[in-house]
Length: 188
Image 1 (tube, one colour):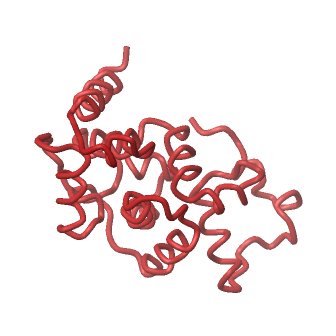
Image 2 (cartoon, rainbow, N blue to C red):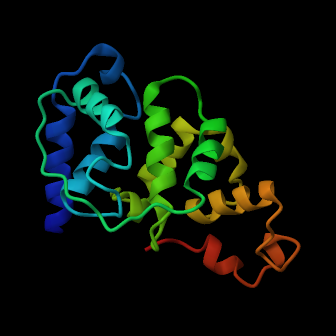
């Protein structure tokens, strides 16, 4: 048994068992938000204690999604990156447009791109599957473009760079790139 995994599961269950207003309780992204908070309370990932959100947004997240919950959230090692606002705008452009949590998650994901690990790890999520759920629900049009199941951070940056005319891969296509195995290999 993995004690960190067990602790995360308990924290997530505690958060999700809290009664929340109907709109928040029915948000399919609520379990992902609970996982982000559980990860931050376990000091996993790079996010600050407010998950990279402005204080009013963070307070709205607590109030609306997990009222009365108390966790000890610590600051992670992340720092602002020069392209933060550009990544945020990219994610917002592709959001589903169904709920406020997508706006929060756009900022959280953009901020987490400052980390050096896989995006799901920098977010403090339990696994890549949670990140895929986040991306599919919050940013479905962007997620649908990831047809090769490229690792999410690489995919977001590749998409961002292509839009900005920044070509970092020397090969004309992923299939010919020397890093193909690194981008598409299973994550551990």
